[in-house]
Image: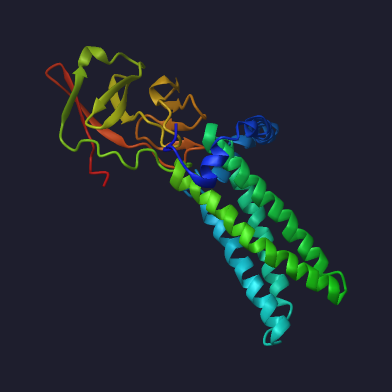
Length: 301
């Protein structure tokens, strides 16, 4: 599930390229397999790459600003050094190195987030990933040329990275399209109002021990589970991609989303494992006169 609709222009053209689905599935499989071979450390590293813990926010968007800024400095420094000699020629290559390191971090986190995409969203993500990966290679070649001990090679390296920079901005546009057009890694509970007054959602008999029950409280889908006789309620829509948590596996007090494997604590909605990075809204629950009522402890907006 995503926030996608009918689109026009280049974005709409990418949406129709269904041939991208096969290589995308292969790449996603490779990335997931890489985390599998890490053994017990795999889930922890994967959650770190998503930004689940300790950040509690998608990590990839935070990292991409580094190469964009560094490469902007690189272009300005390169041509200022060539035409005016006002700054040392070493500034551009140094900024290029910083940008490449930033792209490596963005690549790790980006490909990790990529494993949670599907359909038209994944096609856009595939083009974005291919563009940025190619640019990482191009920028690395530029760096090698700059240290080729030749003025001509240095100049070719500068030209190469200068031409690559606007292409990177276009790749960044595609990344923005994933967030703003498809809602990739956007909190899927962000636009829910919920209820802040006690709202009846069923009778006490409806909620058996360890049985996940989906109810509606205002515009919010809520998952209620009785554990040890006590009712717990959290948002039923997974914050990562909108998966139905009430259909997920429940082990102890942890529910696993059936779509992408995000893990949440039933008691308070805390995210315990990615790809989700945002907690689930937790609601107060009370039983009164054979009825169950819920409400949010505070407004979400």
